[in-house]
Image (cartoon, rainbow, N blue to C red; front, top):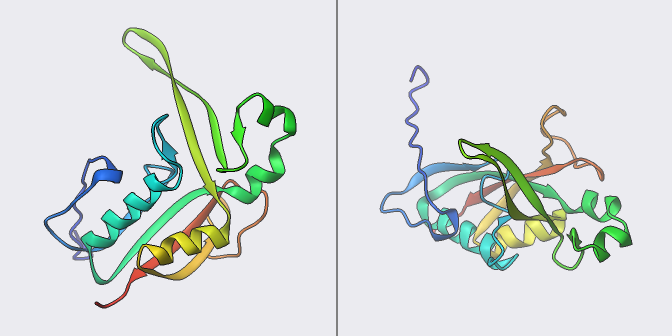
Length: 165
């Protein structure tokens, strides 16, 4: 690349990821893994495992940039009726529903759970995983970058740094 960067794209189950190499940085954007749960995943255990795997794969000083659903928006958006219908779990800040997509055999739907975080909780989870939180911003695509989170935006973005060991 013109900038002298080397990029390695890795396809793996992020909650079970183990690397034999170390890296300068990692990205987890657009709910690519963090916060995206199967019906069997523990809402915090899954994301703690992802952060532990990324932390282990980074060199000291390596950075992780990730985004997740904004739990503040979730709490403000969902009514008691939505909770009673099982489409939102306010205890775990988890949205529940079906994701539909087209396949060669026709339209298919799979159940999906997606976890949101409030900023203090996201900061704590990153710290427990060994990251120093360098910044926490609003992370919704199309809105200005590097600014305080807004209550009703879709996503948060956090930049964590692995300390020197």
